[in-house]
Image (cartoon, rainbow, N blue to C red; front, side, top):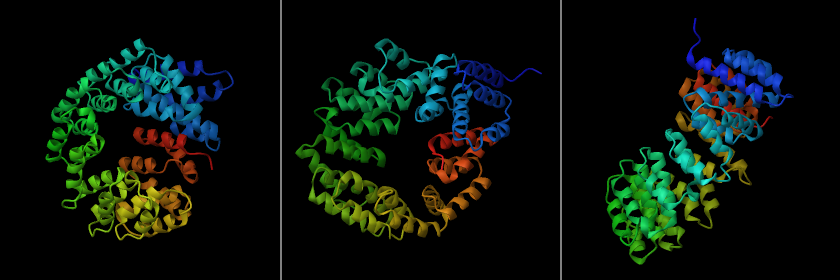
Length: 420
């Protein structure tokens, strides 16, 4: 029986990869590659379990394979880019290979701190793969010439357009204000319109008129981006419009406006934001909590500590994440345990946050949840639990899961989690 094309590519690819590794590492990597080619994931995991270096090598090989022949090459390349020496070795092999678009994605990841030559960059920005174009523009957007960025604003991929618009807006060049205004008003993708709205004064002489128009639309995300754009414009007219929205009916958009006013030193904005933190509606309190960091209030930590006692689990989770792991760790953990005792999604998120902190009860509960979770839930939990040393062994075991997306998520978690 003929070998499936995907498996055949994997055999060729990983066989070639094994030949490229240093002699001292070749025996282990060659053996792991063969096991992966045969889809003997259980044997691969059992052969490395307990050896942190080999566990990381297996996780990197799984992502390397995903980048070359899987459905999510960009995600795999990005994960490898953040995986230290193991990830770099995998990226170097991919960059030297012929598997597209993995080879181009790997070259971008390896050069992300130093832009390539003009010719190489032009080639990447014109690549047939939208993933390659997006990764290139998001990696080097501040190094791309304005004329090229303006052309990318017309790309057929909204991710590329959004990043190009953001970079073009930071240039504040009147020659391209029309491009940004058209993007703000006419682009079919809300992300692109929002990014253009944030550019503020880069929209040109009639920036306030454009932003006023966007504020009157029926898309909250674009309207909130327009408020940030008004703060960036900073003229008397712009700030007057921003204040009018902040001090009007108290909704989530008004909270964003208040936070932007507070950011630029407005006492009215600070007062309105404090009012939002005490509002009876949990959605308003949650939005205010999210925006506290941008508002840069002097007593931000004290305000967040007060929100740890909020009746709404979602508000508590936002406050706990904002405070982080520091001098108030005990109070954060106590608040998370209270939420954990509840039910629903908030309780699960609190459980996962506690597991990252090493709480033994939460760790056991997470292990039980992962054992019973479907694919989507497994991926969600793995994403929340990266860097949890007490769960590393569980992550390693899941490298043998029979669901490819779960194996991929487990590989990312293993590479991000130190050995306990």
